[in-house]
Image 1 (cartoon, helix red, strand yellow):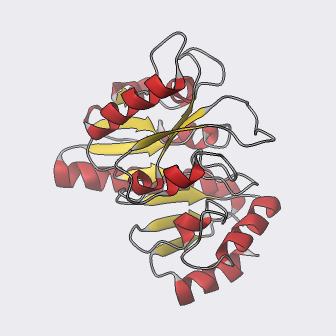
Image 2 (cartoon, rainbow, N blue to C red):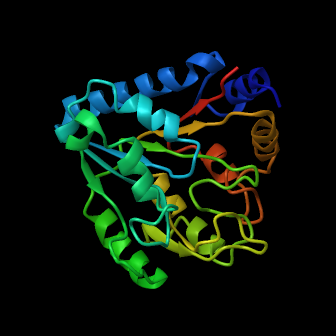
Length: 252
């Protein structure tokens, strides 16, 4: 599926999805500007804003662009969309990634709420603590998702034994402990992830998708039946829901 096809599909079927197709060399800067503008609006309206971010390698350039923009950083709280169950200083920690690439310079004034502070975290204990932390935070103003070539979003991995629980819109859990499927994705750490119900509480979801392989997966998800079942690609649950606005970024 090409970006133009996705735009046409969204216009005909998904009024809650707003699609941006910037030139590839401008995509990160324009996405950072858009996120910053939405956070400024939230701060002006409510005196504070909550930004939830995903981990992995893909958002590094976005983090570094966003931290350079003028924001009332002391009025911003940053937390996670998902986390690997590892110690805070582990190279695979998403919290470590956020500290290294986003919370630098003026952006270090933002309040950061990581999920794990134990040197040897246990998955169930970490999930319980993360649920308490998320319950104390306001509704996310902007929640930045990523998507893998397997169709996962956040750490909602296809075929995980815990996926059905994490997708259950009636769950009271904000954060779910998620065991990996077989064969496991890399890196092979059990995950904590926001549940679908918590993701859809956000005021705005942001989903950047780049590369022919991921566009093909996005097209497959677009063709899933609606509403998608638990056997559908997890990203389908983001595309086919109609309660939460989505900004889909497809660089050309």
